[in-house]
Length: 483
Ligand code: GLN
Image (tube, rainbow, N blue to C red; front, side, top):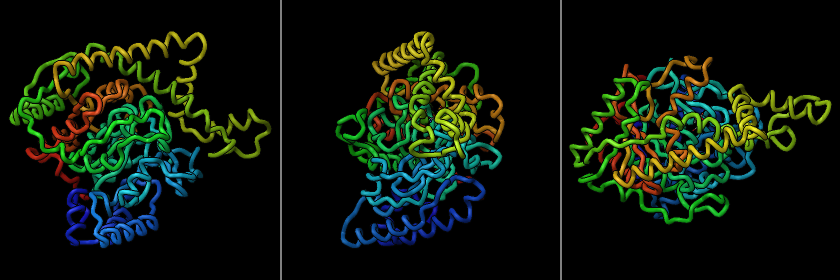
């Protein structure tokens, strides 16, 4: 049963081949058996899952239907879940039980999805390897000595290992697409404002966006359908109707204009990945797409701009964790300053502290203009590059990451080396555009992803291209040995 996709589960439940309760029990048993190797969950929610599964079975017995009704999923542990620990991968929130559900959690629960647990992640979503988690690193099911990517590494590893069919993630600079690429999944970062951020613990508010991780584009369409939509509780949520994503999957690719930026193929990209990307282009050409070289001239400035803006916003967002109202508090503080210093010093890990310091520095008087304001100007130039490109093409295609998954610990002593791995993903966040990563082949037995970017609110186009590609390739069906 663990090999079933969300689409297959919906059919199986509708045809009464199995119940949601049976499926939920089978997957919980599989998690108990296999997750100790991976560490992909921070919390399991067995009781909640079984009661949601029984409720979904009862709704189906009453004639209700729905693609997510009775479907097992998990949430990245930064989506608030009422009465359940929401740790954000941090010691700071190890004891935090959210008093309410995030909009995404509430919407998916209302659609009948079954929550199996909360997945491991980089602390406060800062990282690309899932090694900064207070709860320990997550292992890549394709090779347990390698990282699964981050920051949604727990969601990715769990889905890739067939512990469950799909999970939520968030993407501030690539944290859905990059772990999807590194574990052979399909992951979608929606347009900024498409999915509510209410109850999603903030890292960098102008960049953060929730989205689905699954094995197929078809399943991403199903999960996104349950997540997307206007939310009056999120002032950046956009009041646009949500299209039927599953209905968009079957469009023809005849005449689709694909732009391949020449800047993507510079030094730094593993040549074996470049070859796989060219193969995926050829595959799409066979389906009728027309390929054109384009240019994104300001791409070289993206990493420096992102690593000013994201820490700046993080330093502000994380100021609320001060040991006073919730979260970790140090033992016997002697005064208020001591309380702040020690609570934050003990509660936050090294990477989070580094980002807070960088962000506070970039925002400080005298440096604001030189760093933060300049980064915002670069952000606009990057957006303008995309706008110009989308006058000429319908989709932009390239690698998701410059390298396959690296070995655990390999980049621990050099944070900048890890930041450089984000080169292809962060531009979509800076511009607010939707992006998708899908499986494109393997290098040394490790998965490689191809990234597609589209204009605002064209998630349906991304899913359409990915689905047509997946009907004609079988990379996404490969299962890691041992799982
Ligand atoms: N790797 C990037 C960072 O560390 C992106 C993380 C994310 O998207 N949450 O900031």
